[in-house]
Length: 242
Image (cartoon, rainbow, N blue to C red):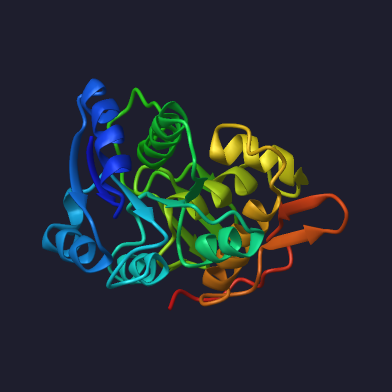
C-alpha cells in the first residue's frame, strides 16, 4: 500500500512510520498543506490512502481536502486532528473525508482504520466468470450499480464523483431496497467497525450523497423519521438516456 501522510507534527509522523514499516507500506510524508498538495498532484493515481491533519501550516487541512476531492473522488481520505468538536467532524465529512481520527490516538487504531478503509475501497465481488463491465450487481428499472467499476447510474446517467464511503453507503442501501437501516446498522455495515454511536457520521455522508444524486435525477435515499434511511426508487419516473 502507498500512503501519503500530510502531518506537520514530526513526532507523530515518525511514530506512525514505525508502524507503517511493520506493515510493509510505502509512506511519503508532507509537513504542510502546500507540500502535501504538491506531492498528491504529482501522481494522483499512485496513492492508496491519504492521511490528512486538520491543523496544517500554509494551507489548512479543510482546504487541502477540498482540493484533493476536486481532482479525485476515489482516493480514500482519513482526517487526523486534535480538535474534538462535533462541528469539526461533520465539516470534515462534508469536505470529503471518509474517516476521522481524533488525537491523541492509538497507532494500532489508525492502522485498523486504514486497513478497513482500503479494504472497502478496493473490495470486489467474487466471480467465477469473466469480468464484464456491464455486469451490474444492483439493477432496477431506473437504477443500476456496478461494484467492479464502482459506478452507479440513475436513469442511465452516472452519479458523479462518489467517494469510497458514499459509494459503499449507496451500495448497502440499494442492495436491500425499501429496507430501513438504522444509523448504527449503517455504521457497522459501511465503516466496518464500531463508531461508538456517532450517528452524525452517517447523516453527513447521506447529505453529500443526496446532493450528488440530485444532480442527475430525483432523490432515492429516503429518511424514515426516528429510525434511519432506506433506498426507494419506486416513485422515480423512467426517462430516456441523456
